[in-house]
Length: 138
Image 1 (cartoon, rainbow, N blue to C red):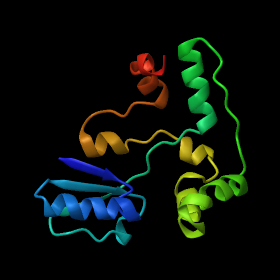
Image 2 (cartoon, one colour):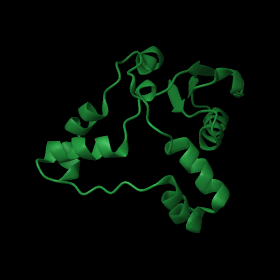
Image 3 (tube, one colour):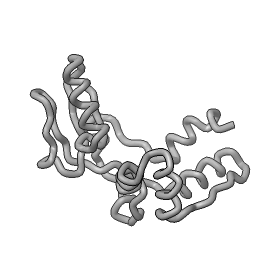
Image 4 (spheres, rainbow, N blue to C red):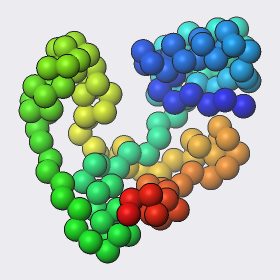
């Protein structure tokens, strides 16, 4: 089974089509809105939203695992847009920030059963993943 997250977004939908064309499968596409999904024959849209943590929380987790400070500077959406637009263009910078730069709320941070429902295996938190991969950060 191949699971594609963000399956109705530009990159995800192109990936689903490419995977289907190449014979990979079965395919499931994770999307917040399955009604929006248009998949090739044999593809299945699954409703779900992966847990998000803020970049700051991720850096704090890695710093704690390393036992040292890791510098982190949060910037505004406007500043991020200005920096990204220089090489992506205005429209693409807006799209990336819409996808990744939204405000993190308790609703977005809530742990869901999406990964288990799709893969049959329990999801891991960012902290669990970082702990398992801490050596890569040294």
